[in-house]
Length: 544
Ligand code: G1P
Ligand code: ZN
Image (cartoon, rainbow, N blue to C red; front, side, top):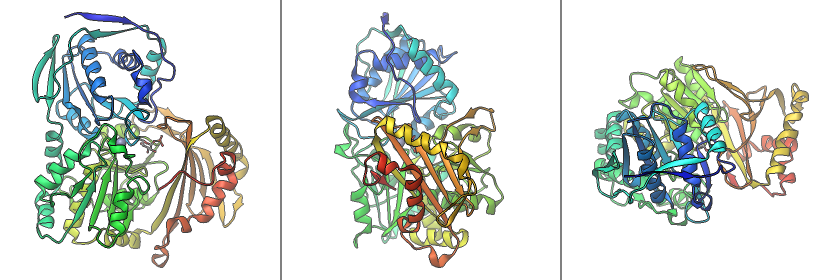
């Protein structure tokens, strides 16, 4: 068994973004491109000799080829074992679960999450550390540094490994274990939620659900858990077969890209409960009958209703949200006498807080919800949590959310994305906006008064690391906010996200369309940034 050392040269731009390295498939298909990155990951890890690496992906185009390259490189780089989801498939939360369960050294996730897949679209790779979560910045910085200096990589010269049968085999001296990607994850879910209660909810026959897996990785997980274990009617899971191009869908569970589900749920024949997840299964969208749950509200509701679920009914250590996520969660935390941490965008910032047992539940406005059961956000987990609440409360999704607003007030919330903006224009818009900040404080903008305008920077309370430039915040005296951020996951030009939030305590004023309730703030955002004008757009590409 020959270990080959292949000469290579650095590729530009292999810097991991918000969630790993994402590029067009064609970029990854260039000879050595993926191998360079994988070697740079391995070189950033000390003590990996003889250790276990978990590998899984969301099944998108190039997943199989990438899995084979990684297996051969892991063997050549001294790993003792690779645990691989059958056919190279595993959802992102399941990879996290498997890393933790088998005390693996780390894992590699092959996914570009919610970005479209197939030729002409996106592929991605991300390294997760032994707590099951995305590598922290000091590791991703070291990986990036390696990519800029790489001159060779190591790979075993063997035929492709057998990855389609569950069981053990050898790749050189390394063991390869192919596992059922669903089993360990499903077992964990059964420990956290009251499956008997949810089963009874479906058994009554009146409660109906639709889960849209968007032709992505969650299909097999959802079918097994919802239909086989919980007894939801066959056909509850739609678009349930993972496809390399997601059947042409853009696998992002939001009001725009999960339109088929949204139309169904808002139609007269819609189910009682609707949900969708993204390409790699870590995002979720929750819908009731003719009712949409904003993700910022979703994490607030789960945190208030934690006692419903057996895995959480002993209490929450604390909660956390990303900075742009609405402060609905802060209100719940204050009521429960626990801390709500505010971290930069990206799941990696929650890991330390969970490891230090400071946080149990956390969420992001970008359809990400999760807990310390793993170190990734978890789409199906959120769906099961909602089912558990519905089953205990015997209430509809709309009732649950409206009761919540009644008690805590409603944080009207919306995000406007301007995708694929010319990078130079985007950078100038952000720079010019920030340059106005010194003079903004105390200024009246329409009916709002600016309390604070800054560039968000975060100090991790566990390891003391500081992350700067995490988004431009304008906070008003009534706690309304406008936030501008440049996306770290896009693969074309730059994507600018504008997040707008306004608090409404009065229950009689909580039923407006968020776009109407937020109109003045949205206009102020344009006035301050001139983003629409300067990017020559009529409006945002996506509104959530
Ligand atoms: C986006 C979301 C962010 C999420 C990330 C990975 O990142 O905004 O909340 O953690 O995807 O799913 P962004 O493109 O904004 O950098
Ligand atoms: Zn995802």
